[in-house]
Image (cartoon, rainbow, N blue to C red; front, side):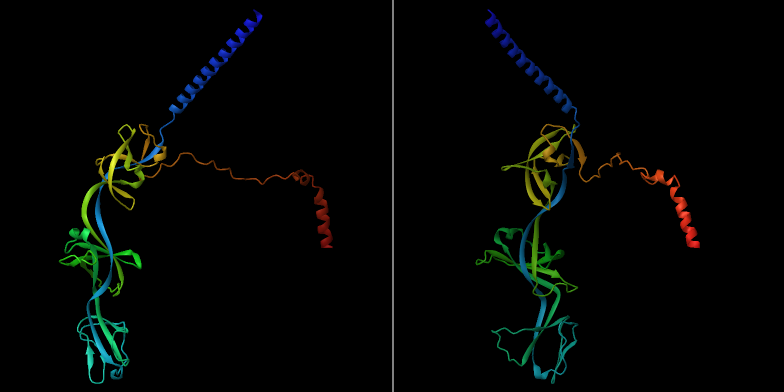
Length: 336
């Protein structure tokens, strides 16, 4: 009987300990659940969906050629005065004084010297002058045939010099070929570019961007996107500041802005930054994108200014006036 009673007591104590652990875990869990449920929602940056202008672009390269060019072949022995190369001239100016004649310019331009290549049969005693009108430049480009239907005459074109991408020039489509080049599978197009200050030189390599299919579409920041395989989602915020995961369809992406084709409407609010802190169906404290953060009322306590010097451990010795007598004796000896 004693042995069975002991076993029964051990079993009861074991079950009592298990019950106590379960109750304790439940109470602790409820405590932390209440504690964390009282936490304020996280501050998340949001942005309103708005409309922006989007356009497709065909990008290609081309070489600048002058609007007018004329060459003059001159024998060196005929030249009476040195020719001033790389200078601007006006129509009617004399650019070369020769023994039997003078050469005048038929139009405004810049005087240059042409180098001979091996395939040009010219005497070594000759030089060729080039008169180029670079106030207007033409750029011949090849547009892939898949984009040919989108190129129209007088269409606006953005142009950049390959050596300076920061500056943009404006041009127009001057002419379009009547047929596709079967060798290149492209459409020859000529671009006209005004160059009044002669900033761009003839022969420069230019980057040409032809824009087409301009349209107003909804836009969001690319930092709002949640990519899951082929699907794209955003966190949409309702009037009660509750976040809902919403699938959308996107279009063009350019300079951090994404075109939205479906899934949102104008005026909707989406999470712009802070996706990792956001949870579906959770609440947030919205912070408008671009707004200045409120300055904190907490200020660092300033230390009071020190009015007195730090007291030394030996200040009490100075107060005893022990050294004053010796100092006075030194002064008397000096006077003697």
